Length: 212
Ligand code: PRP
Ligand code: MG
Image (cartoon, rainbow, N blue to C red):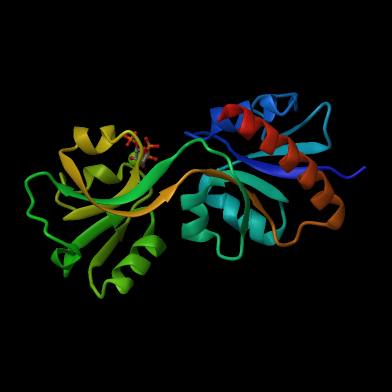
């Protein structure tokens, strides 16, 4: 019998809540994330523990049928991937921040500035929409340190509690988008696995209603 292949973030903020929601819909998974793949005992499902940033490509290629992933990652890398359900956890923003003491009166102030980010496509879109030209520094993590070490004048990164911005002496000046965890589907899912996904989605919807 066919099994639905679902990708879940291997480590990071979404992991715990992703596993919790699967548990809440009555799916019990054999092994922890030390194994990169695990099967559910009582539902035709295989869980793949993957790096966040790799998941959109796996969905596009049909290596996995579905994923629990941050909408912000799909917006950055997941063109053509559809969201089937918003899951109501891991909400965050993708925002621009500058040093607390910097003068900022609007997007135009970013003209010619250096912006450090892990979300280049999101930033490029925003800058183009606002007719601003800036220099991008693409880094993979600890983005908020960039202004302090003289690498950038501004950053674009995820803001959740706001604590990382605060600790690094930065202030949020623009919100580019708001995001939460979503269930996303591969354009290449088979009709058989689509049926399984429908069942999973139905269960998720009743858990989400119960959580409200
Ligand atoms: C993430 C993100 C922000 C921070 C936001 O970083 O890149 O830096 O969390 O959360 P907060 O507003 O609650 O502080 P993470 O700690 O995952 O590390 P990384 O940037 O090195 O990947
Ligand atoms: Mg960070």
